[in-house]
Amino acid sequence: MAPGDVSRVRDGDLTARARIRYAALELYATHGEDRVSMRRVAAEVGVTIGLIQHHFGTKDGLRRSVDELVVDHVVGALATVDHSGSAAETVAARDAAVRAMLGRNPQVVRYINRALLEPEERGGSLLEAIVALTTDEVERLRRAGHASTRSSGEVQVVRTLMHQVGELFLERVVAAIWEQAGGDPDAPPSLRITVEEQDL
Image 1 (tube, rainbow, N blue to C red):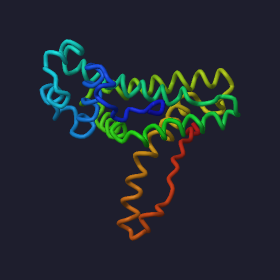
Image 2: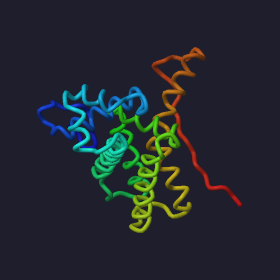
Image 3: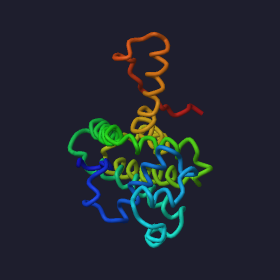
Image 4: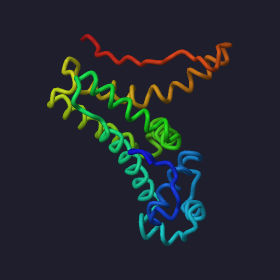
């Protein structure tokens, strides 16, 4: 399994706690957290609700742990990047590593999509964690000279997340619009989001 992958592996390769988290991730991504009970997660894994409560306490505890799992895999993808190139090459490589991980793990894309579209209902914890991670990474790269300082750090955080996550979500929308407009489904237009700092 590539670094940053959360693709399902053999149950025997995972602890019960890990199997519960993976099952919850896939169920939440497919159906939404509100529609998935702890009983359903337990049935999916073949364990008792008591075991889930032992490891995670409450349903909120399980959801927070799934959020942490998603963030851990973003971190894992970023850890594969070589920082020996120019600032532009480093940023492009980091964007590509996260997008590649997300491309291999559609359940993570669906889970993040729900979290970003419904942050109030979920308490916004995953969005907060991803923004905090990205802010820390941007600041570290700026200090090390691996990222441009021509834009503010806040703009770079938004730009980074749009390149890593936003484009991936919107590509499906663009493809659907392209197909409805009669375009060749095998050759949809490419998408690139530009985030610019406002002139005040």
